[in-house]
Figure 1 (cartoon, rainbow, N blue to C red):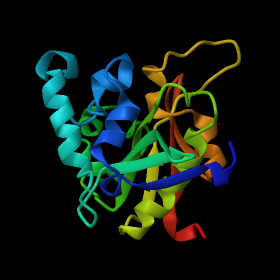
Figure 2: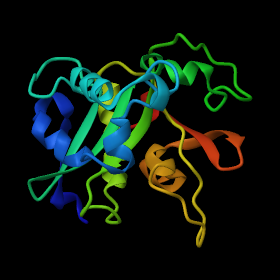
Figure 3: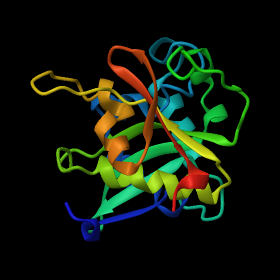
Length: 203
């Protein structure tokens, strides 16, 4: 996949039908609707599919250019193909109680100038083609244009021959963020790292 094949826009400039096509109705993205770090309580116990879908629709503000939105949508040759969630870190209440972002670091949990990339979804038929790479790169400009001073991600370490299910890898792979210019600033679990880019230093 070359850069010329991919167009990435804020979700509020995409249609809701395009986002529905990306998430589908089954598989992990279709069930979660990018609410793992948003939904109160235990996502599968304390929210319904309909509630999660409604939450995503409100958060993305699809079809409402100029409204606040919660991520980016990628098109490949004009077809809706991928999604990445990127917002102020404070927009994800589940991050506050997770040890992943905070282990070994002194961070102000209420600092909304630090943004976070929390979720990728790639439409069936477009997976395995490297679409998360341009999506990760696009989060940098998107966050910086909206006043972020730093951007974080919490990806997984992938190893050859070691299978990781799509549900686990929705946070992205370490190499995807390293390729985009993020640097590792924490390693809170054997398979999870914290990657960060200081936006004032990025051209």
